[in-house]
Image (cartoon, rainbow, N blue to C red; front, side, top):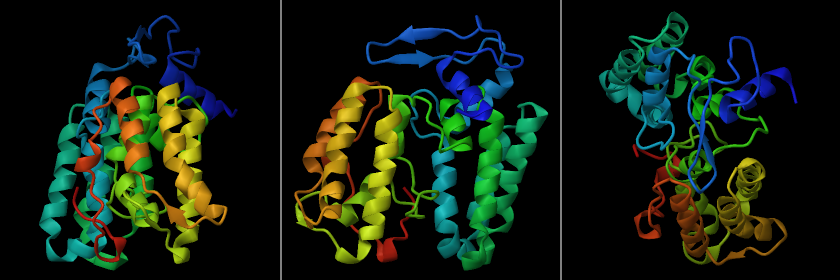
Length: 288
């Protein structure tokens, strides 16, 4: 494990003695579905408040980060027709971090400026600069937010809170995944293996492989056994397709199982009847 990963692991689990970190300052509480970690007592309260509002820890109910991802994904298509709408997202980012420490405020300004300058360029909008700005905010918040820690270093192998995994599956736009659209992961998966039974599209096996890999990463690091089991059931039709069985029984049952596990872990997951399995034009997604 690299030094950076160790620091992030300490931030997410409350362990370790990194620079400026009081090993006694972080408290944990047993919720019956795993262990949750509160921010270190030594963390700047203004930083914790701003980052908490942006990233949504610990319940991940409609955080601003989700809106930011959605609008970044739709900007190339919609931005030129209504740049003011996207500029308002920048205003929301600035307002969230207005009282934060200088480093976080500066990072947030960079993200806000992206929304004021890039959407109006449409297909020429620089999504890589969005990723850089996004990870800049994540890095500033990593000490006080598990979601930020994993956004700052997506490939780390530290244990990942089940509620965050569930939010990433059910509610987080796929802007920075291989799908690169505003659809949430479940909606993107339906186009590959279906909510109900369907044939897996043979021309999308690259996406099937990438999705199986994404699910495997979440399975390997989620900190809850029931959520892990649910994710394995969701992954199964992707693995079967990669092994040559192109008929999928769909994700309705597996997502019900995963949703129940997420509910038990403290995340309010949508019922299968609430999930959107309608395709959007060109898989570009839309506001969610």
